Amino acid sequence: MRSTGRLLGSGRSADVYEVDEAWVLRRDRAGWGDATAEAAVMEHVRGHGFPAPGVRLATRTDLVMERLSGPTMLEAFTTGHLGPQEAGPVLARLLRALHAVPARISADPAVRVLHLDLHPENVMLTSEGPRVIDWSNAEEGPPGLDWGMSALILAQVAVGDAPYAGAARDTLAAMLADGTPGITDAGLTEARERRAANPTMSGAETALLGEAEELVRGISAPGL
Image (cartoon, rainbow, N blue to C red; front, top):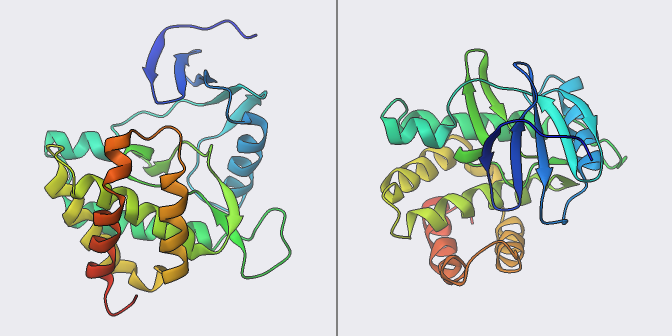
């Protein structure tokens, strides 16, 4: 196992450590993911011009990747440096750009690379532009599922009691206004089923799914 440097941050299932000024180590502590598969997706989308971090090394649990400098989109919300009317279109553009990348494995032209966790905590605002992190959920499939997941994640925050619930609602509305055709009934339905089965979500978060789905459908109408 690779030795670790200073702990930089922790998420629901992984910790991020400093390697040096250019690289960080993300270590899975839950045992659910496969960093080698994640790294392959990241390198594939980077090869097609999508803004994912570079990768230096990957094992099943460890991923050594490019160290990015800048706040996450969520951090920019909380400091007042970014507003929902700016954030929503950025998320929509990132989803469209990702779905323009051909699948790495499937030969079906309707199948694309999906991030399946693209939301403000996973977008870093660097001096070179927004960069998308945390590709652990990435799969190949229909783009509507990716749009549904991003919309539902925002909607769960919007209908909850977090201090930035209002910002999440406005970001969701701005994202869908910039890309409503990406939302599909099948994609949103599957997104809710997947979120309900997500072992990292609390019971309180899961209980918000029904109201969150209604919010997405209400904003998207008559698209859904």
